Image (cartoon, rainbow, N blue to C red; front, side, top):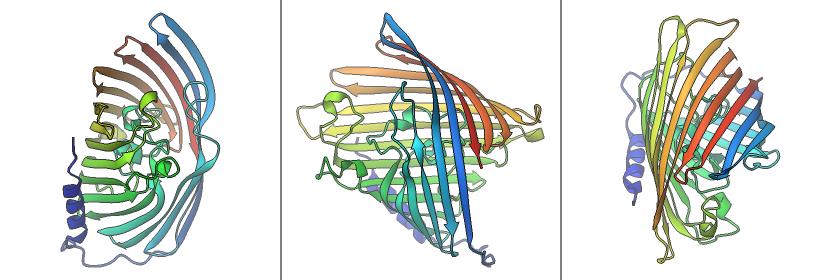
Length: 376
């Protein structure tokens, strides 16, 4: 599939130039400079059952610091702000692989010409899929789903580059150009990486760079978005072993929707879902094109009132995707159910969830996760 990147870029640039609405007559008073330091810690207990063959199964127990962050951010003037985040992302030394020790995660400067046009430069999140633009500390379940992580890069959801973005009434656009940082030393022939996203909000406007997995009933939101991520002649260290060193023209397209509605006594319903279509067209004409198509759908409900000193919510998620590569096709599905107890919103919470994963080859993996997160 060849995604219509030109049309998306054109829409984004048109949005940037669209005149301001007539009601915006007076500018808000200038705000004084502001600086903030924040620390975040997330600890997991993880029990996983793994099948390597239909008749072979093992249980793996793991206790780990899943995420640790130190964040410096500030706004020295009305038009300039910065964001610096360092930390680590251990995704399970026993269950999966470490992301390394403490390192720089985000480091960018944002220039705001006006509400319709801002420019971000540095290392920041690729504008592809809302789940990846949400903090790992405000997810509806213990962590993001697996489908949003189907990215062709070890650098994960971040890259080095620049992005033009802004808000035109209820529309937010993002057009970003990255260097594909994990390609620099191993593949000098790859092109720049282009990512675009356009989102329209009814009810509350989500105007910032990041979103929340749930606003805990504080906002009424309906967002619909489309996005594209692409890069030519790139490698994929996350592909199947024999194909990791094969250059390919990569394209990924997704459409998604997010809805949150508050009810009496601060109860809230949250629904979030996306459809993803990814294509890897290998430059070697003897290799068949790889195609991934799938969806995830998740929903949560925050119960009314307090239970003890906090709030209780539950959530469900379904993920399903197919990978086609002639002559075969594989299917993977994951079902997750979880509970969250919010002592102080997303700043202090205890979460638990259970996931059952099924693959075409009749392998079933189960995982139970208990997470404690603190932000201060």
